[in-house]
Structure formats: C-alpha cells, structure tokens
Length: 478
Image 1: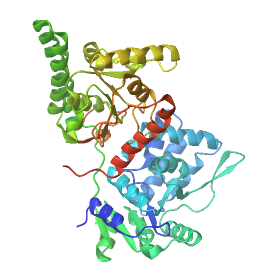
Image 2 (image 1 turned 90 degrees about the vertical axis):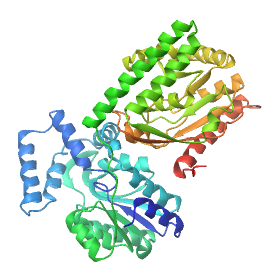
Image 3 (image 1 turned 90 degrees about the horizontal axis):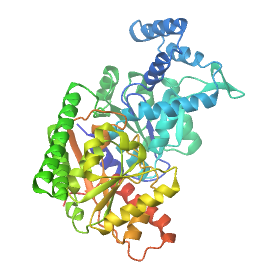
Image 4 (image 1 turned 30 degrees about the vertical axis):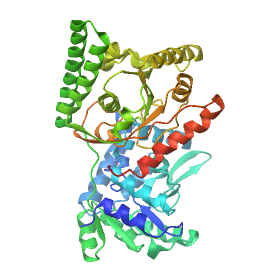
C-alpha cells in the first residue's frame, strides 16, 4: 500500500506544468472532520441559532445521514441561515474561525501533498461543497488560489439566503472540475484528485490519478475495485487524557528543574551556574516526561559561533522548551511585553531575565535593543522569534527586522533554528502537549560583518527564504 510520502515522491519525480491539475476535496481530505461543524458550534455558542433553525437542521441531518434522504438539504438550511448577513461579516467570521479552530484541523500530510504539487507548477484547486467563506482562509494559508465551491447569492453585499448555483456535492462537483479543466487547459488524464467521501467517486473518476484518502466504506470499495491509490492519513493530534497527563508532568518537571537550578546557584554562590543548570534541566525534564523527543540536524551549529542571535520560527508554546533544550546555557530571550505576566513563564523569566519589548512604543523598544546589545557583547546569546507571534499553521509569517539590526549592531552572527512540527504536538491555542518527535534543523551561522542598515530589509527576506526552503525540502540527516 502506498503512503502519503510515497505519493509526494512520485509527484516530485513526475512531470511539471500548469496543464496538470491537482484537485483536493476539503472536509475529510485537506482537513480532518468538517469545517461546517466549527461554524455551527460557534453560532450555537453565541446563541445565534434559533429553535426553528436548530430543529430543521437536526431533521435534515437525520434524514440525509440515516434515512436515505437528500444529504444536500442540510446545506440548503445552512445557506438559508445566512439571509440578511453581509458578505464582509461572513469573510471576517471565516477568518476568525480559521485562527481559532480550523487551522488546527489541517492534515500535515495533506499540506505536504499540496506543497509538492505547487513546487511542480501544477494547477492546484480546492473542490468542495463547502462555501467560499469556509474554504478561503484555508486555501490562502496553503497557497491555493483556485476554488470550486458552493456559491451563495449576494445582492448589494447582503446574502439572500439562496444558492447562486448548484451545491458541489457528488456529480455537480465532477462537472465543475471538468468545466474548470476545459476553461484552463488542464489535461485531466494526467491530473490528480484527492477525496475521502462516498459521494466523491464521480469527482475522482474525472482524473487519471485518483487518490482515496481515509476513504469511507463505499469509496474504499470503489477504489479497491478500480485499483485507485488508497492513502491512510495521519489525523491531527487531539487534546485527551494522555496529553493532559503529559502537560501536567511537563509543568512539574520544568518547575522542578528551575527550582533545582536556583537552589544550586545560591548554594555555589554563582548565579550564572544556577541559571544554566536550571534552564537545561527544566527544558530536558519537561520534554522527557511529556514524551517529546528531538531529532536534530546541524547540532554543531548551536556551538560554533557563540554568542549569537538565534532565530526560530514560532508555532507553539512548546518552542520555548525545545529551544531551551537545544541552547542549554548562556542565553536569554526577547518577548512581547504581554508575556511578562504569563504565570507559566514566571520562574523561568526570573532566571533568564528576558527583555520585554513594547512594540507600540518605539522609544522603549530602542532602549530594549540597546540592553540586548550590551548582553550579547558580554557573552550572552539572544533568542528571537522573528515572526513576532505564534503562527496558526506551519506557514511562515513575515519576519520582523529587530533581530537582524541587533546582530549587526552587536557584531555577532545570526543562527537560524528551523522547527518543523511543534505545532502538531501543541497547537498555537492549545495548553496541552502531545507526545511525539520534533524535527529541528540548525542552519549554518550567518556572519553579519559588513552589514549596513540599508542591507537589513533584503537580508531579512533572504534568511526567511532559507526557512521556507528548509521546510519545503527537509535535509537528510548527516
């Protein structure tokens, strides 16, 4: 049986060009579960669903799922509920739910498949019965610009509660794909499609290279009969009892490690010894008891050019522990001022004495950078997350320039630390850690000799591109 990784390799070894399509279903394929569930739950939680709509929805769901009725009826009910709402309101709603909920449901292996097709210059398309407001933020994050979806009618920026075309479920989705191919010069026999539902047999039959992902029973039978590729995809990790136990143990381990370090510093009369011991012990213990292991490529680069400005991409609160375990000694961190009052970081903050920056006040930010420069020149390395915040997905945000100015002024190198999957083990909005392996790649130190302030914008983008390239094509272990 093929694996998703096998298919990625086959795509990268195959033909290039925009005449080859890669059509992806959304619910159950790109994401685990159903995006409509997140929309519905949010509306229920905010008391936006009346008793009449709730009753109609439940009846339609039971009829479509259990009694052999029309499954698209529930979609009609959902579209009717949009009547009177503005288009801008729904766009904003979809973007908010992406950050809060649906970003965490994107399958890592589906993201890898999409990246492979994009690298080969294929025309990548999301084809789904969902609405544009459900699909748009997810497609944007994945770099997909083509969307075939269920369109809803809008007049003067307000939803009428009616469809603007067919619901793309079953055969209508297949027809939409064929029309898109005709209009855009897509060679369907050479193209790919990915889906999970029984209703997607016609959709998958439209292309020469169909793939059934975690297929439902009917699709699995059809795929087996027609010798289509069947892929078993890894589900996003969910918060459960094991994650709760891991997190509790991690917090206890980190606190114990920091406490031991502080005590040893007092006992030996050497604060730096206590800080270094406490930080490494806290990070190592927290990761070990939570079941998180590190797979590190380029480890010598952590030590070849100290002091340095270490920069890392940022998806998760877990990143701080991972970086702490890697650096081990003689470092501090830069954080936004709001983090100063985070109780989870209180003891660690007392030990490493991080510098907090108020981005809304340029004068205090400049003073903070001056403090950091002095620390670097005294032998302390600095850790900066240049995106400035935790990303909702593995896609990199823009890099801020502060770390690069700091490195130039202090005359020390930049050392990039690329974290591949901390967000899988602990999503941005989660407070629980799942066991697993974090992949880390430490890139070569980047000298700052000869840099001028005029160089910083270009250098920042070049270094960010190194992160992008590494994440897209992870290096082999030495």
